[in-house]
Image (cartoon, rainbow, N blue to C red; front, side, top):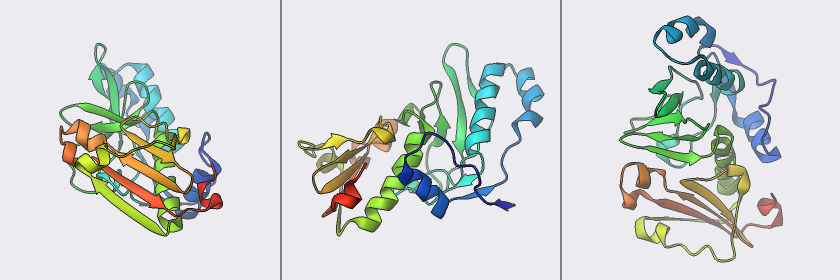
Length: 216
């Protein structure tokens, strides 16, 4: 496995996420999509879907980032694989191999969503950029907050978000981030939805943050 400096930062990220990648990310070799194009076309995979995989690989392939607090850390590194699906259902491709043994795959969905796929498809963020932003936020909040409270199940589902505003950079779907006057809240609902396991819903409350830590 060859390691590379990150010379070209992916576009469309906040300053927080760019700083996070620069400080904590590394690049390794990743799938060479063009070596598989003809084979995939022979399997009936549309060329437009192969182009999607190629674009993902060009922008994100081989990027290794610190783990997420949930999903047993998330993908080990961002690296695509063979598209799966059909013309009727749409097409998915792997966003990256699991870091640990979890009962689902990390996938990029038909509309570019990042999510988890087991018995059902559950988008976590509207794009891979949202997932990366959530990793950056989790690192930022965990190193800035004097107090961190973790709640699960009904307690997480019943959290009051009055006075909080959603953080649009994470493009949240099953997973969301919220900003309050002195705190941030991360809600991870992907496993609860994907696995029909409401007890798996988890929230982290990062309290006691100052104005610097809360800046957009």
